[in-house]
Length: 133
Image (cartoon, rainbow, N blue to C red; front, side, top):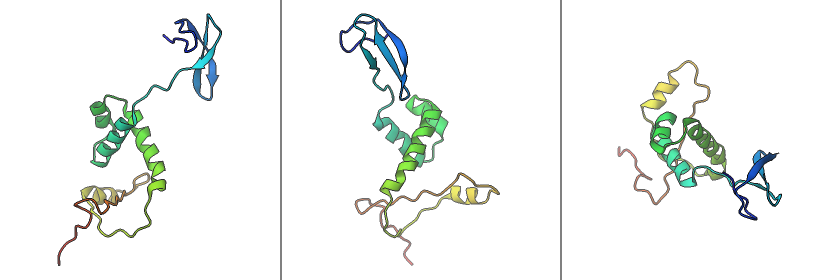
């Protein structure tokens, strides 16, 4: 049930959609308003990204965080689009590649797949790992 933010009345009816958001109209005072966005917090979305980077699938992340796997997919996709804003111009010194790279690159079609390189930074203990030769 939606309550009116102006008079507090609990009798509001749907009154169209504006900019993709449901509008409501109070039956007692006639005030039109939209409901605040209801969704998962940015902390949960960040946890989903961390779990994805650890190798979990969308469905298992959804089960773990108690949300839809489609929502997890959309969050990861949004983080990927925003990655251009945080991209570093520094040269990459150390890259870790696991068996997933060889599996993906051995497929005949690999459209939609890519490699994600993460710069750990100077504060990390794994920032400058290298093979001594």
